[in-house]
Image 1 (cartoon, helix red, strand yellow):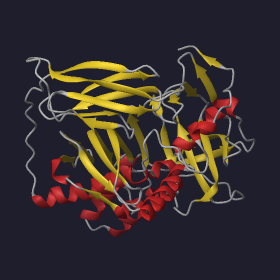
Image 2 (spheres, one colour):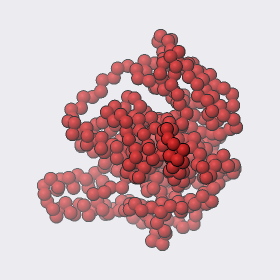
Image 3 (cartoon, helix red, strand yellow):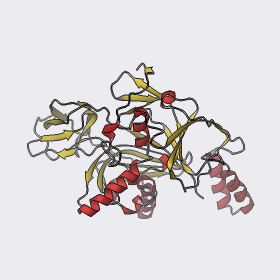
Image 4 (cartoon, one colour):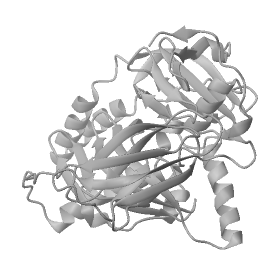
Length: 411
């Protein structure tokens, strides 16, 4: 049985743009001994800017697109260091002290090699993805993963103490991911991940790099990053996005997800075919009913709010926001995603807010109060992930000079 997934991304990303490229230099030392820490990873989270400290603990990050970033320093044996950095034209010089990481005893989980292999297969499918790009993604060091599965709650957890390295040979990136927490909740059908990553370009020929650039642009257009950049720049309609107000209610004829799965498991084990078929039919019912799409397209000013922090914007709307990308069709069936019969089969996403506002930056990345995505954007995985400083070839990000709406959020 196929269950459509929702996805909740909780990640820390950077923000605004100014004028000239900036630089960050410094030294990483041990907090206790004040001695240099060599070979520590130093990077701007979710960007393509990173390096490692030299034997004397020094590092240099140059050519940085100005803005606000999360600077991360990581090495085994020490607590991960992170600091919000505002990069401008002036050089930044830092002395970073790393605290020793206390030895933490993990809960002992007895599992077989077969259990680990099964858990890893589930993790890989939802972390990497299953699209064409995912077929060319390789996890280089899978055995650093700590994988645990709770059969009662039907939750799979994954984390790692060092970088999980993924080579994306479709997009031409090596992604080094500090996986703080990854969770697959099979009852709620929600996937969440928390972590920080840095992107490195894979080596390749000129023709290979050209193909990678094309694939990167394909991943960018229609993505959440593309949408948020267009939203603050006033280019929603121009680039093929349409926003609608959407409302719905939970289907009272469909029992709670945990009840459905418990009954299906029970009657499967008891080999009671009629009861099993009954509950499978209930599982196939849509979660929602009384779905209503207001077909009057929304404007940027209807949902976009400026904050008092430069380069940070907020999105706000009642009920749900229905976003359509008219330049690509969606061939993946999702019984829980509402589609009007007279609407072409365009890619569509339903956005749910958990707070009155979700905050995002000029790079098109959600930085606080992450929303829930259903539909096209919920299918995005590491196989389609781009660095925050990515600029598409055909539509330069630097050309986005439109003024945002005058609505101001006091924050």
